[in-house]
Amino acid sequence: MNKAMPHPPAFLGIETSLTGRRWVGPGVAVERAAAALAQTARLSPALSLVLARLGVAPDAAASYLDPKLRDLMPDPRDLRDMGQAGARMVAAVTARERIAIFADYDVDGGTSAALLVTWLRHFGLTATLYVPDRIDEGYGPNVPAMEALAAEHDLIICVDCGTLSHDALAAAKGADVIVLDHHLGGETLPPALAVVNPNRQDETGDLAHLCAAGVVFLALVECGRQLRAAGNAGPDLMAMLDLVALGTVADVAPLIGVNRAFVRQGLKIMARRERPGLVALADAARLDCAPAAYHLGYVLGPRVNAGGRVGRADLGARLLSTTDPAEAAALADRLEEVNTERREIEARVRDAALAQAEERGMDGPLVWAAGDGWHPGVVGIVASRLKEHANRPAIVIGFDGDAGKGSGRSVAGVDLGAAIQRLAREGLIEKGGGHKMAAGLSLSRAQLPAAMERLSELLAAQGADRLGPRDLVLDGTLMPNAATVDLVKDLDRAGPYGAGAPAPRFALPDCRVLHAREVGSGHLKLSLGDGLGARIDAIAFGAFDGPMGAALSGHGGARFHVAGRLEINTWQGRQSPQLALLDAAPASP
Image 1: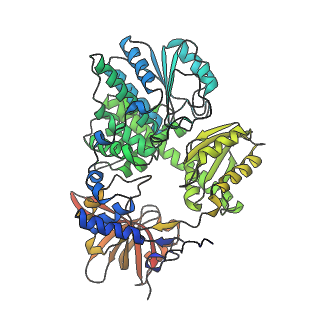
Image 2 (image 1 turned 180 degrees about the horizontal axis):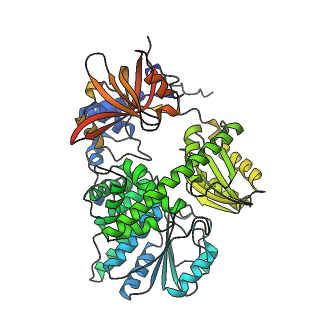
Image 3 (image 1 turned 60 degrees about the vertical axis):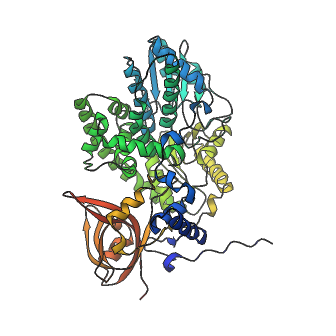
């Protein structure tokens, strides 16, 4: 008889923190691997713990800490149809044909479109950019748009969409269509000259972690190879990796393999401030430091996304592809305004959806909410909030009359895109698709109850109903005097961090709150000390949205174990370590 694996003891004995989480530290195997890394590769204990958690072996540590794109770059032709796609694109450039780009309205679609616009500009060609309106047209190619584009163009390139658009692509009479996508494919492919997609049913899955921008970049590499073979030259593709990095992080693609090299190199290029659109966007967001992966996902990405959510759908792609600083500044300012509007709309929908989901219950395999008039541009963000709150896959649907458009977000180990596609095949929704961690769907009001019941069953079969409360996984402990700027820089060597490679999180045990005050809207700024003279500043964003803010600000001299991410705070040219506080728990008396 098999015995269940023993539950590891809670780290520092924290079974339930101030945010209701159980703390989990490194296991014995990770600690042993970290010791081997520290001894063999001569790395700091903290960095060794992080690398061990990421599964990096001692003999691979050097190459992991200094990833080279040339070593990780796959052969583009490992993807099916890539040779045909590259040949057709090169032929279109050579013959100076009329080219249209049909792009999705999110960051991945915008960066993918900007890559192609930039590449074609090198050859003196101006492509027609078409981004569908989220509300009026919905996701992906549609019949009227493809008919109109085909009437005026020789080649249509669909980016970050098109894999499931059989009828729309069939309507593109007289034009060739290439699909460069990464969304989960169906059993049959649409009628296109080439469908390049690492998530086609007949692909190996080795490159399934690529976002659409990564697929487009590989296509441009293949085009470059064919151009060189014919004695011609293309643009500098390495200079375009800033766009690939932004698309990869914003689309929450796993930062593994070549994705990690894309982002690492792309951040270096972005720091040069050579692309007018990204410079204007960073300035509008008051970003006063070289961007990190965090800024791509939480500062720049949401602003690019805002146009497709509640504004004009093509704003992001136009911003990222312009060469005019004045136009870039105007577009960035407009996106900043739209992003503020998006946040206000999101807050209203989030409050209503959370109340509804809590009333329905948040311990099943699926958390969902639906409401009249909920803006389709924010339902995906709200679904993400519900997922984080419940540690369950979440769906949020907005209805306009009887027509509903929804978006979902999943958790690790649960493939939401496949489940949504099955609903579509079974006729329980009008259409739907996506990938493992995110998906979209359209359905009628009458379909809603049966669709959510069936989706719950499908997700339960994947174990979504057996997920426990969110654990806070920590890499180890640090004392305040060890949390230095040099340590943060050392840990950054194992980055960039993001999906598939979470940032290091450490616990600082037995700290006293020396000072605490509320800043901004519900945030907490505090200074922590170890009682021996060492101290570190910390900030807890949204602390007063839960019990942590009140507990730490009204500490009454109590001691706390605190946990979070180390970062560098730059103020008036000076750098100091800072703890981005994620959680806390009272220390034992």
